[in-house]
Amino acid sequence: DYEYVVMIDAGSTGSRVHVYSFDTSVSPPKLINEEFKMLKPGLSSYDTDAVGAAESLDPLLTIAMDTIPKDKHSCSPVAVKATAGLRLLGQAKSDAILKEVRRHLEKDFPFPVVSGNGISIMDGSDEGVYAWITTNYLLNNIGSAKKLDTAAVFDLGGGSTQIVFEPVSGEKVLEGEHKYNIEFGGRKFTLYQYSHLGYGLMQARNKVNAAVLQAEMKSAAHKFSALTESQLKTAVADVTLENPCVPPGVSAENVIVELEDGSKYVVNFAAPETEAKKDASLCKFLTDSILNKQLECASKSCSFNGIYQPSFADQFSSAADMYVFSYFYDRLQPIGMPESFTLKEMTDVMESVCAGSHLWDQYFKQQSHLKELADEPLWCLDLTFMTSLLHTGYDIPLTRELKTAKTIGGNELGWCLGASLPLLDKTNWSCKVTKQF
Image (cartoon, rainbow, N blue to C red; front, side):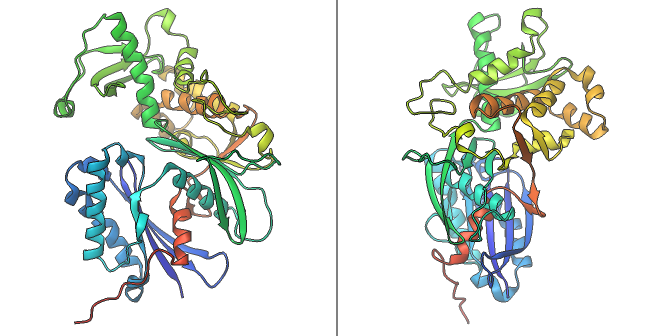
């Protein structure tokens, strides 16, 4: 007799449903099946249209209705967790959307809606810790009484990036928002977690592109005018800037760049023509510089932006896994990276992509790899930022082995499963009493 959980991940680019079935007669509960579907665009694209946003989830809820046996509907909880993208709309708009989503689910669907933060924007800390639970649950590292090494997880979203690991040596994790205590399967864990808001891949891209644009504005060779939201929808760039993160033979067209003051511009980016700007290390210089490593570290060790983080060298077992996923996977797997590689190998692949499109067929043997690269002009920038983040930001040595995956044992990685497992305790929802007429 199985129990079901419906988890909707309202991400910045789209919404996804996960319908999980568990065998709860064993401990920890055994995951039996997962139904998964994604649709675009995300809730945040509806802006002030809260009703449209709520109704956009209907095709996903239909999947849940069809997957879960009818007699189980009223005891299968549903939660909607939005990620950083929705937060960027501002409090008033995002609150209106979430309120309408809750009303729509409670009124029009048979599933009990999880109370409290069941329909909410997740804290980055929750997102990271849930992803850590998912990964280690699927690796069978947690859930039994055995004390095993746990994997560190690095999740790269569009708006933010999360790091979570269990520091292993005797040194205590300093008190603060980064310290997270959880209990799972009868064991207590003290985790270090941090969500670096503004360092997801799309935000990092924008920071680098903004630096390029601002440098041009200072030199004032071109005249730039900021555009309104309605102009942006149809704007075509009339200026092309040299960007060291765009490889030879590649151009990125009509890129929207937002500066810190909120003004937005549309530009084209091309590979540098001038010899001085052709230096391949200039892109890495830009992606390193947005990490602000020069900021003072007030504690014993820091990652970037002056943020405290226990050191991997001292605090993490060299035998334990390090999993990188989400955008890490999306940029590595389609161009042929294996599931396990060193950070040095990742850097080599970055250099191959950034070398220029005329050299790609020497490095990448499959047509599908070449097509992926041709379709995404900012691939070099993305990989360069990723290596900066891991090596410069988190101080992971180049010799360290990393793993990337989308699934373990056929089950999707990410935070959704980790957020669903605690719902089996039934502490924040109860079965819905269906009215009999």
